[in-house]
Length: 369
Image 1 (spheres, helix red, strand yellow):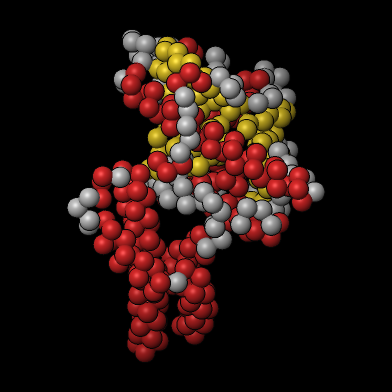
Image 2 (cartoon, one colour):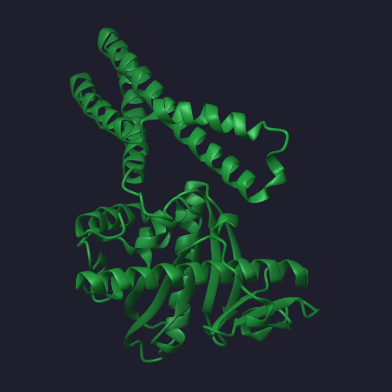
């Protein structure tokens, strides 16, 4: 790539960033930040805990957005100087450095552009993800474990903090289900397009005749609740059971009954947590999961009512992606048509292409945003 090509690509990237700046409007955000900082410094702020959490959380998110935009614009300006320097001195090493920075900058601006499409009610929230094995026996349990690792690797690649709340291991291999949180703003908006049934086709490693097996795993994605959500759960509506945490093959990993299972009696929703060492911590975590599921249930009911009023059906469908390892290799999203021919890369957490395509598809289809 010549310095002229680099300059042209940078110009296009700068225009994309300008479009993002026009949407996110950092100047108006700076004015709001000043107001929020004044509220956050008030001596009586924490007299109202819910309001304090709302103020500090919004301030943190807005400041992070403004800082990110400012840093990207500075990098665009610096890269322009670097390209000009490479051209003036005909320096191959400087040109190579500029090429690497352009590639890195493009990836970050593309990711930020996707964020501008996330304007749903809960898109800014952290995410609560549940992976469960479905049809396919031991292969499905193994597949669910692969899916779990895939999402944890995706979060790790981005530096997002995760916490596994509960894992139910299958007897022979893999898992029956697992629930974990991705503690990053906009994690729900990003991962919500991953909800649905994931289908795997491969030669079964558990079949002594090496036959091809199709197995399924389901993924549910919920927004993490906040203090301001006001979901009232009367004590009489829940049943709390305690049990001993277990590992693979039913092996006990805790000698005390610290794991907690909560049943919401009116809806039949059951959640459990065994990640923490104390029963109280597990109960708090399980209640947070229950809050998120009830919040999502209310949101889904509201959307269903709106679709009914509009005479619309559900355009999502349940089976959303196929992972084929035999007789050929391909991962294909059945909604967007996006596909890659290297499943091992996807299994290692390279999901951004699928997530970006899913978000754009949802916007085009008129979903949530």
